[in-house]
Length: 364
Ligand code: GN1
Ligand code: MG
Image (cartoon, rainbow, N blue to C red):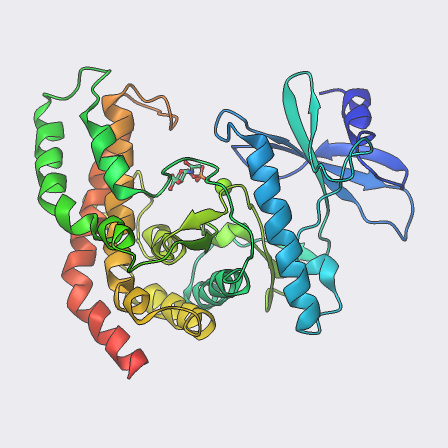
């Protein structure tokens, strides 16, 4: 996009600094992101982002959730005595037209502007140390939001609803249902469907609460201090919504504790990393244990299986329906991903005695 176009979008927001340049930032696939550099030394730079409203159809809901969450976190941090708020919570700017609105619509596209957090780095690599930091930060994020007074919206409806994800797998728009590999996977997934939908049943019985979750807990969704020693802030808040707490605990381990990428076709490379699992769990329990119910804690091992299982079902759904959601590089790419994630389910099942033994050692 032209500088002048981007500049005029920035002008829709209540920015007092003078913009010097605007340039692309990062490599995110979902949203388009730019760094807005300002001239004044005492003014921050900004991040301008176009929100992908195909993935997030209700932009207003996304930004309302983010407003509630960042305001609540800011209050919590102030109460904890934090003085450097700029580095510890995202700050979105209102528009010039409406001080209560955190996004602007321009030619059918939706934009937002936030303060750029300087002196910060992201990490792509997971090791026990960063896994521990991630556990602690995502647990702390949930803990700070455990008493949000307002109801948040579901920015992607039924996002982590296992019953819904299984039911969706009956559609076969691409006509791939009868392939032997599909049938085999469906049978194995079906054998576990009852066990994997336990959270929804317990939720209906009023035994398991939904809480504000991040719902995209990856190591690169946290900002670290420049020397890498401290997590400053959890970022990428589009998927923040009510969910069972398993979303943030289980989905991190799905990617971080597997020795192979989620589309690795050589399944013999898939192992479950006990070191990452243990470090992440220790960090998570340290910050989340105080607000979790006994049942939530007791079910954390279930969450470790649930997320590779759910991702296997979601990839298979996309394969059956013609690969409209995840980009594919070859025709069976989504099938391979679904099989890969199911392989991880089996590795986690094998590791379950060790997983449970570790929990016992931590909780007693
Ligand atoms: C999507 O694009 P990315 O990596 O942030 C998906 C996640 C899946 C993941 C699997 C909004 O996340 O739920 O786990 O792909 N996000 C959405 O690769 O569907
Ligand atoms: Mg993301």
